[in-house]
Length: 139
Image 1 (cartoon, rainbow, N blue to C red):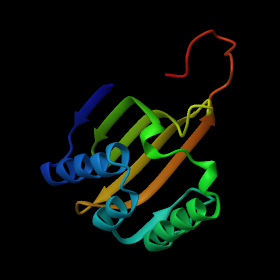
Image 2: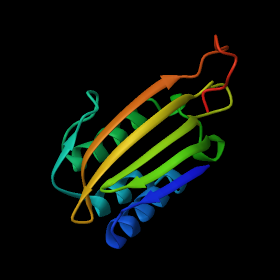
Image 3: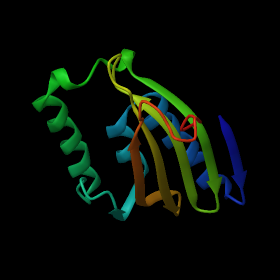
């Protein structure tokens, strides 16, 4: 994984690293969101609610409604490609599949911090195709 830290304050860098560990390594979405989002949080993913607690509920309800749609987390595969902490932003580019039959998706998450808390989130994702025109992998 390529990493870069540039001009981030110590408190923001520590908060970003803890958030990264909780969300992407431990897959503890509720704790990551509850510990690290600040007042006035703004969500830009059109499928997610704006309120962090509503997001925690949304993910729990989605998983409960389709328990067979997701393999156990032990079968998930995550490959981090880039992690940047620049100014007030944590940017993470990664591949994730949620089971052995899943081709996976490429994600780019952008988290903006203010006062050591996340106040804004954007993401983009793309399914991994069978082949690419360039012949290069997406990571």
